[in-house]
Image (cartoon, rainbow, N blue to C red; front, top):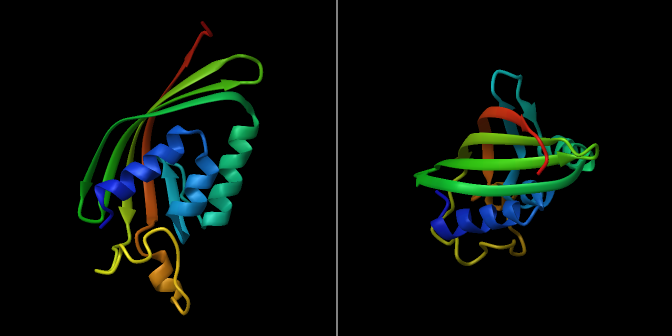
Length: 144
C-alpha cells in the first residue's frame, strides 16, 4: 500500500503542473486509466502521450487535490482541475479518481525514490499506480 507520504508526493507533483511527469514517475508500465464510461487507455507511454497532448492545447492548468483517502492498495482523490485552453475558454473538472496501487515490500524505505542494482521489474513497479478510474463532472466557465 502507498504510504500517506508517498501519496502526498504524488499529489504535489500533479499540483505543481507536472501531470505527465507524475504519470512517468508514479504509474506502472502496464497501468491503465479509464474516464467515466470511456474504454480504458492502457500503458504508461500511451497515458503520458495523451496527457502531454491535452496539456499542449492549454494555456494554463490549475490542479488541486481537495481530499484523499488511502485504504490498503486503494486510493481515492477528489481533484479540481481548471484548464484554460488557448482560446481563453476555462473548463472546470470536478473529479474523483479511484486508484489501485501496487504494494511496497517491507523494504520500501530503502528504495522508495529509485531503484537498486539488480532490482527486478516487478520490484521497481511496486508502490506505483496500476489502474485509475475517474468519474468526472465537467463544467465550462467563463474566464474572469
